[in-house]
Image (tube, rainbow, N blue to C red; front, side, top):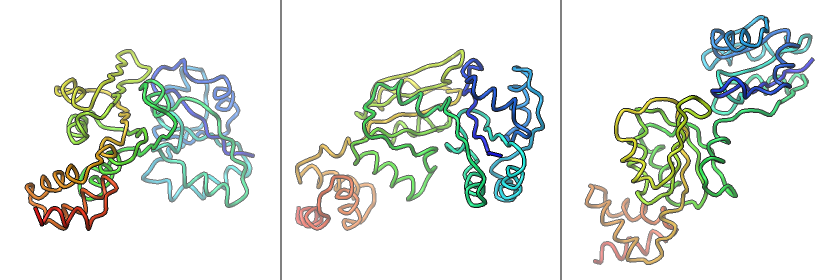
Length: 266
């Protein structure tokens, strides 16, 4: 018997596939993040199945048990919305099934990152999905530096109350698309620069958000003097010349030594 990974709608209930509905009807057990939310979805389509809460707080403990159940019965895995495992629980269960030889069947279906990427109008030849960005510290700084440096399209999940701060930390000229409440009644896709989006979303923001950003704003900084000027700004903010030179060089592909020599010699 297989474990069936079943995508569910990210908003509009009509977006579920016929194959997904058949998989849910044929399942012996449905593992889900929130039994209430999944229960409403199943009730809408008149499907009655046993539900088991499977989420980030118990997945490590339940994964081996569910993998064993999938040996003898048909287990369907869903999340609250969209495709399981994409910034949602499921990885441990899928690995557990693979390790014990249980077949894994993955159904295609709704996905907020893919929907937002297509709606953004930004290039899709090189895409980096990073889920929710780190809230603070060195990890957040490294993510933002990567966005500034790499010429790729980055896709993030972001909470409404942190969106404005995130937009303000991006290069003001960076092209972005803020996709809010995708497929729902109040869907909104704002396309523009990070600076323009920061102004648009400066007030009270509600709903689920996917942020799409075209990276590489700093990759276009070619001259050594421009890089050194960026390092001077970091020094003015309180960083040591050595760290400021390293940070500016890392963002632009310049050698730290040449940036530091010009910085301390100027």
